[in-house]
Image 1 (tube, one colour):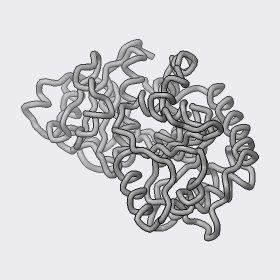
Image 2 (cartoon, rainbow, N blue to C red):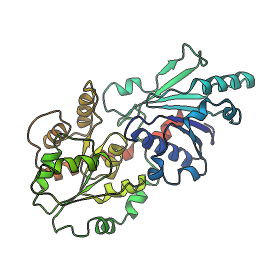
Image 3 (cartoon, helix red, strand yellow):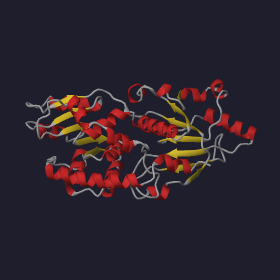
Image 4 (tube, one colour):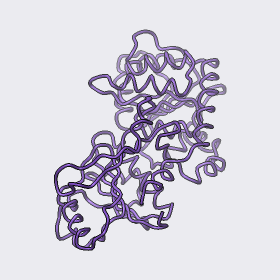
Length: 360
């Protein structure tokens, strides 16, 4: 494995900036591992708050997606050692054709081509991880991609995890963060963060919090809009406040500081697991309900107690019924469950280390 290689990562922003969040973490961690990275993205606007210094980071180039089809731009670029297609996006044909011609001219081998897939705990993931996918047509006919599946278990690609994460957590001033963001939190009150889509049980959660010493911190965008909508039908309101947009390190701080985190999608699920605090996951909903099996597989892997399974099913609209109260017993069971899962993850090889092993 060469010590310093050039990576092209391709990302299309489909919804909610989750894909970009994962790709930026991957980009940053590859750079920190001594690699050079070009991140091609069709909408980089979220980096303004997600990673404010993205365009000034050494070893990283953030490039507009459209430039990958511009012959004048491509002619100025050295060929990369690795291509990464993130989450089902397709590299522009003009880009492929240009660098195929470069490889033929210089008699170079094809770059290592990786199809980075979505995260799942389902049992088929280890069987698919690392399989080759021959290209049968187009300018790269005869080349081969490799499927790369992130995962929670041995035989998968692992999870993104920075090498200094534990040190950052240990040096984090939790009390100062809580004082800044909830200075009037009552004794015995829980600090709760909310990052979600539009969960069916949100009105029930808000009603449960009314009259309690707990304080709800609501993240911007869809979570804030969902809370504002739900509160319109309530005569009494819980203690809550809205948070501003923050960068990825600031999001980690929130997860570390809160007693209970509601998270959504893929990137924030991983960060909640690594934080080790109790959490409820709002999985990205799919039209064919394929996310139901995906959620159940995750609950199996985390060895969720019945209370946690019930909470997830109701929160995700998979099961009708009353939102289960998150009392001290339920939160205690959840803490034990999450801490055990976190320990397993820190003992596993991280995603970037495994990804680099595929590069030839």
